[in-house]
Amino acid sequence: MSDSFPSAAPPIVELHRITRHFGRKVALDDVSLTIPRGGVFGLIGGNGAGKTTLIKHVLGLFKAQSGTVRVFGLDPIENAVGVLGRIGYLSEERDLPDWMRVSELIRYTQAFYPAWDPRYAEELREAFDLDPLTKVRNLSRGQRARAGLLVALAHRPDLLVLDEPSSGLDPVVRRDILGAIIRTIAEEGRTVLFSSHLLDEVERVADRVAMIHQGRILMSASMDEIHDTHRRVTLRFEGPLPAAPSLVGSLSASGQGAEWTYLCGGESLQLRRAAEALGAKVVDEAALSLDEVFLNRVSR
Image 1: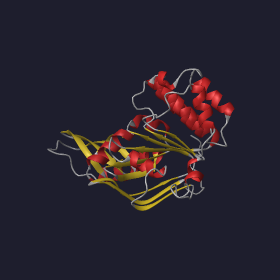
Image 2: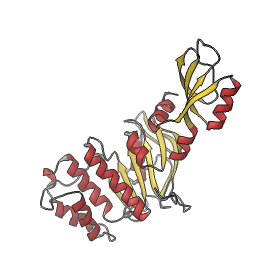
Image 3: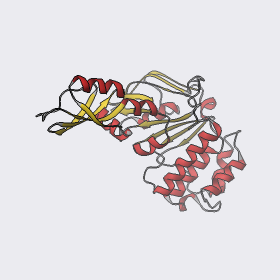
Image 4: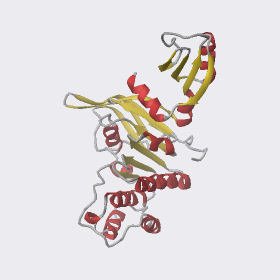
């Protein structure tokens, strides 16, 4: 990703204290989130965590029961035309009209977007190997995902929203989708909101990440910050111990005897000083994966 992302421009999405109930179920619980302009913003969480509900507020499909939503500085419900005309959207369901041919789908979608780029649409169709004469109903799951991504990208949206775009797809199709995301960002400096429970994919493409669990935001930070402040540290003590001593910033610990491994939140220097205070020597240290960070945050 370019070092210029995210830009210093006003944020593209601002959610302030959003709460949403479905009967007795709390889908979003006092959620505040800012998505900066430029780059890929990953929204991660398990099934039922609130990712799709949050996205539907951004798209103006749900009205906030409390709190405010601003996209491009506008309310997406009161200014639906001004907001949705600048958003490209691909959902997990990939709900496309089955009776249309691929060429008809492209022409049909083009009518809704004055900024549609026919040449770019054709480039995407060829890159995604979509036969213009094939009906949508006859497309494979992977081809259907590619067709949905084509019509989401071809008007060069300021904000591309992908809700579990690679769910259930084979690795080749998932690679194509991620490749299209990267090209869109690298070449045009636009913004992607990428929701997924596949944390390894998010880690590969995201500049920033927000973790959501049971309708609450656990943390929101840049990938660099997450890697810098979440470490796996193995300590060797002078003698065997029956249990892991308490370490500042520790999320979990495992081991035995004189050697214990901690998963920690904190800067490397801070953790080393804490280890020294315990009379321990750091024998190994590495950044945690996004998956490890998320699982430990959720367990806490």
